[in-house]
Image 1 (cartoon, each protein chain N blue to C red):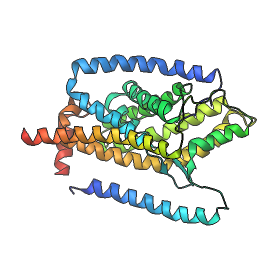
Image 2 (image 1 turned 180 degrees about the horizontal axis):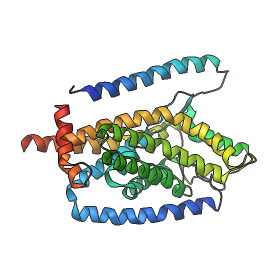
Image 3 (image 1 turned 90 degrees about the vertical axis):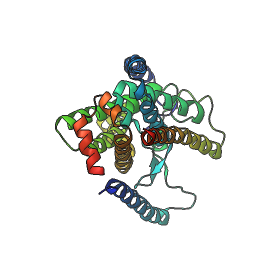
Length: 230
Length: 99
């Protein structure tokens, strides 16, 4: 979903920087508080960031003859909310823009918005809604992570269609970009959802107290999940 | 079932790989000389934009000089992440056992 260097004309690259900036600032503030108040959650933060590193480096072949990569930001979005996930996404995107010429410095704002903010925000909202409605925790995680991945690419298509409506207009351009990105992404999103669901299971097994500390799962739900896995 | 989820995820990945192989065979058969399938979707979007006559207004200031070096850096990125994940889960598991 990386928009490549120079592929967003003015004013769009500035616009996306401005849109992403407040999320990053709030994210840094929240990170600071997390470090001071919930130190035991730091390893989990490292895992969430490391997941973005691993998953966004894997370019997987999809079914329609092109390759794309999962984002991995859904996990961070569920665990820490979209603002902290935005900071995690920013780190990875800077790494890829500087060392790999993948994405770009001028398009960083737009890429942070799609991968770091929009996707994780969707994951976060789905998780909150799912747990409130009493849906199975793992099913919720699967859905949250898969849709975070998919939404990232839908947002990228919107960003490109806004900048390059061409002669077809916004909707025509959007469907052209979405045909390239979103269609490739559907199978990858399913795989990403499944992998993150599995990782969440291991977190529940090994370090459930962090999840209650972050107000993600109640102790009774955790007990139920652990009994089901035993 | 204790490993139900692991089996389900493994099955999903096997299905994914099988469909890929099947599709690849079909795509390779219809491919002309010198054409290459399985390019990046990012690049396809860039081609679509360039087809409209747009020229990127700025180039990356540094790009990996070859495909090998690019894959080295991608592998490095994945390795950094994998080490952190493995370390943390191992640490949690170890501290649980000794607790």
